[in-house]
Image (tube, rainbow, N blue to C red):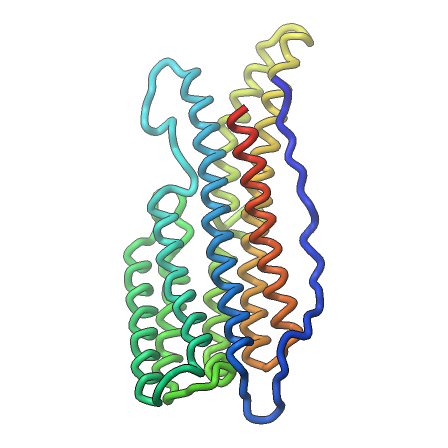
Length: 302
């Protein structure tokens, strides 16, 4: 069997975009700037789903190939990383973040200060509920990447929202919540992991391949001739490529979360060019994830 090769491109260059005109002094913003940020959050959520679908798909396929060669079939042999509970926790964590971005985009259309205040109250309650739920979901099996510490950040956002008076200017809201929103994106990035050595999901995923690679190493030692070893080497390379492809997807998602943190700060400071460049980068990473997933799908169906 010939090894499957995946080719990665370098992250897209950040292109300066003069999208919005901000005024100095008291922060004001037309709907377009907040909508730009909301679009970036939506793109990041789509990238998260694409990444997890691809990572789980590759892991599951590898598990099947391993399981069919065993003497008996057990559930443990068909593990998927991240597991379904962890994926559900990630989706729950992203719900209030997306609601927050949509809230900013809709502020200028609010009918009254009371309407804004009610909306902020509901948003704060959503962050508090998410915090409480995630604190009850620590560990999450072998893919415990949402823990009590990161979950507490959602409660901090709720507190920041509740401290605000009715505010119809998106930049003003972002300025008051920026430290807490930055923390949310940062802890999500940290949960993925700065590298494969941990802590984080990247280390968990990498460890999942260790058993598969070890099996090929044993086969290599047992193979007596170069001809017998050649298919083992090819399979070994194939596993390495899939492992590294998974890590590239997760590393890209981490970059996206960190870029969203910078995008929110740019929004809070009224920096139109920085905001546009950051969201352009996020959208490019989301497309890259879809392209890689297409490669995975084609390779797994051959």
